[in-house]
Amino acid sequence: MAAKGFSYHRPTSLGEALALLADLGPGAVPVAGATDVWVNLRAGKLAPEALVSLRNVPELSGLRKTEHGLALGACVTHAEVEDDPWVAEHFPALHQACSGVGSRQVRNVATVGGNLCNAAPSADSAVGLLLYDAECRIETGIGHRDVPLTEFFAGPNRTVLGPGEVLAEIRLPLPAGRTFAGYRKITRRKAVELPMIGIGARVTLGADGRVAEARIALGVAGPTPLRVRKAEDRLEGELLTREAVAEAAEIAAQQAKVRDSWRGEAWYRREMIRVWIPRILDEAVLSRKG
Amino acid sequence: MERITIRFKVNGEDATVAVEPHWNLLRVLREELELTGAKEGCGAGECGACTVLVNGRAVNACLYPAVEADGAEVTTVEGLAGPGGELHPIQRAFVEKGAVQCGFCTPGMVLSAKALLDRMPLPSEEEIRTALAGNLCRCTGYAQIIEAVQAAAEELSR
Ligand SMILES: Cc1cc2nc3c(=O)[nH]c(=O)nc-3n(C[C@H](O)[C@H](O)[C@H](O)COP(=O)(O)OP(=O)(O)OC[C@H]3O[C@@H](n4cnc5c(N)ncnc54)[C@H](O)[C@@H]3O)c2cc1C
Ligand code: FES
Ligand code: FES
Image (cartoon, rainbow over the protein chains, first blue to last red):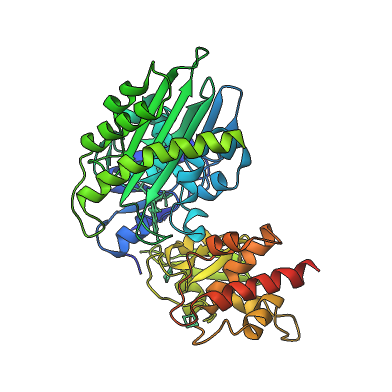
């Protein structure tokens, strides 16, 4: 059973949710799928005065696909992403990241927005979203602001969201050009485990056949999910050769702030980055040819 | 805290329960409605013993705020058998394939399997394993469970 002593509110519009959060004050915590919130309540790590549920807010639901890209309502669940063939085709790394979160039971309720707002260094979907230059639409109660995902995280389990603010939508532009991308989480068992290291890579080729955009993103390699710009720089403007990819992987491995923990040792995490960035891109190239 | 009255359907029947905000759906099912098929194992989303269907989707009832069941259709293992008590084909396959030993995981396994077969009538072995990955079994070694789901899938698709 969770900690006692909070009230539970179920607004049915975004305006109502924001008004409730404002009225109830800083003791009010938004809740979406509750897979982090309920676990934290039970563990005594969270003792809110009120929970404001975002589950029934229609403005926060739904996947919208356009010719420019994808807009994910913050309350889109991981299972909705998993079950969407269009997302699998156009944003394969995001699809892989979301499909590997927890179990089907977790994915059926856990939201993508919740994964970002919980801001765990290990957040799988966050790494997938970083690869695609996601932008976050934040509703403040008096208006909104758009923040690139690279600036959304403020530290372990901390974001730039102020009290009463709600993440409303996550927008991803469609990569412009031939794109190869993938995400791999390294775990000790095959399912229902947080990554020991989360590894994502994307390259988008320009008309000249060179790498126009490179994205390397990691989970559990620092205080927040992060991009490794130095590794990306090694690839951009270059031909996509094995040497270039191996060097970028080496840079990412060296830049990663990995640690020893009971889940895995630092040297191994680094080694996995070295091994998997090239493999992810190889697999992506092969699957596109298929 | 003041109780909140929720109205929902359990196994096709209307239920009205006054719940505390911190209750989970598992507590409502087991203690208020005396549907003890769903079990509490870990209480934290890891084991799947508490799996039930909410609007056809498998969820961990231990992490499902009871308040959120308002207006939903919930299915527990008690709702699977036919009116005369005859077992659901998935249940029958579990019995026939030896997929039940102590039985603690079984209600959750059966419901995860049902949610899978409802959306994917003939899943591959890989798809079955993925769908059941959130259900732990300490007894069977899983092989018989996978076989049971395959057998049920074939029977249901016939
Ligand atoms: C068994 C289990 C396995 C798991 N496995 C994984 C895994 O493999 N990989 C992984 O990355 N995570 C995993 N998780 C963690 C969790 O499921 C994810 O972080 C999930 O995406 C959280 O989403 P939620 O909707 O449940 O968030 P909630 O628990 O509802 O909320 C999480 C946090 O975000 C805030 N919040 C939620 N939505 C908003 C919003 N729109 N605006 C503002 N604030 C908001 C809440 O206040 C809270 O602080 C697992 C959890 C469990 C219980
Ligand atoms: S009791 Fe709910 S997942 Fe273990
Ligand atoms: S039969 Fe005993 S836990 Fe599965």
